[in-house]
Amino acid sequence: MEYIIIIIGAVFVNNIVLAQFLGICPYLGVSARVSTSIGMSGAVMFVMTLATLVTFLIYNYILTPFEITYLQTISYILVVASLVQMVEIILKKVSPALYQALGIFLPLIVTNCAILGVTILAVREDYGFHLLEAVVFSIGHALGFALTIILFAGIREHLDLVDVPKGMRGAPAALVVAGILALAFMGFANLV
Amino acid sequence: MGQLQNFTKGFVKDNPVFVLLLGLCPALGVTTSAFNGLGMGLATTFVLVSSNIVVSLIKNFIPSKVRIPSYIVVIASFVTITELVMEAFIPALFESLGLFIPLIVVNCLVMGRAEAFASKNNTFSSIIDGLGMGLGFAFALTMLGGLREVLGTGEIFGLSLYAGDGMLVFVLAPGAFIGLGYLVALNNIVKKKLY
Image 1 (cartoon, chains in turn green, orange):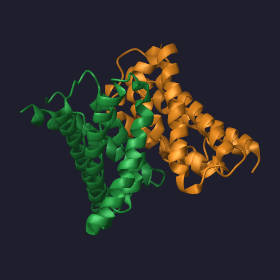
Image 2 (cartoon, one colour):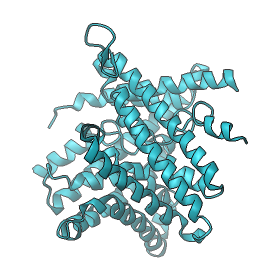
Image 3 (cartoon, rainbow over the protein chains, first blue to last red):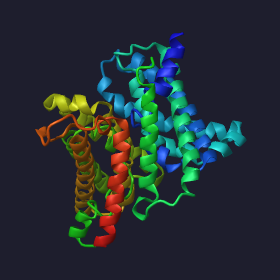
Image 4 (cartoon, rainbow over the protein chains, first blue to last red):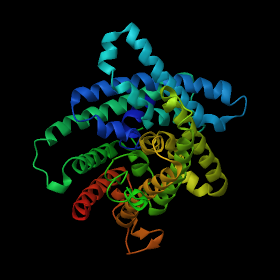
């Protein structure tokens, strides 16, 4: 039951894009088509879960015992960057089909602040997660990212056909649409 | 390109937030007030200028294959310095910016300037570029923070402008997106008039 609450909280209440403003760059950058946004969400889900697993272990079994938690930022970004590189190499060998599908999105993920943000949030003391909870937490946030980016891509495909005032064309219109979507997600506040 | 142009390009013409759409996560996340926006902008400026200096100094020693990880380590070191200094001297601002301080590491703006400018230019131009882009970023964040603060709470930098509560939605998440949307549109119009 508590895992379900974590997931619902991560997907709807504290939605990573619309409530916490993480991962805005891919959210605006690769949401022009539904198909590319599905590829991006797949890659994010994959890397976010793995990265949370690894960084959670590093934080609790290396950084905390040696009292060097101020190295958190540096060690985490290196873990994320090398993990992405590793996943890319392994996928290329093991599953070329999946590699083709995720292909260009994997390198982009290094600078996706959603990944680094969730790995830092997962070890926050006030949550007090143990390993499995932290992994479920990251899966929930990845699902939330997938939901919002696919919804947004669906809307943007239609936005292309609409006659928007000149100054608002492109990014401004997309941002206002994202704002209205965030307004809709506010309805989920206090759900959990 | 003259140094003056190099400096001023970050404000309207190539503003990192309004035109390049880089570093949007902190731009939306911390701008609940003009002061927070300014603080975040200045913290990013410090990291940007420092990493630009170091990257432009070491650019000839770093093999191009490992340049991205090396830049990340340089940037992450300066972010850690900023984090520790802010926690020690301005704890209130540190608290309200929260998660977004460590996340300066993955601000595409910092990495982007290291890769696109500092790795190709001399140290002096890199400092000017870092200052211009960083202050442009701070300018954008202060504008957005000010807009949200005025509309949302009726105050600016804590000074009360009009009586009443204001529109709460502008302080909350949707207001960030909508406010930024209209500021980008405004910048598009101003840019067309100027250039």
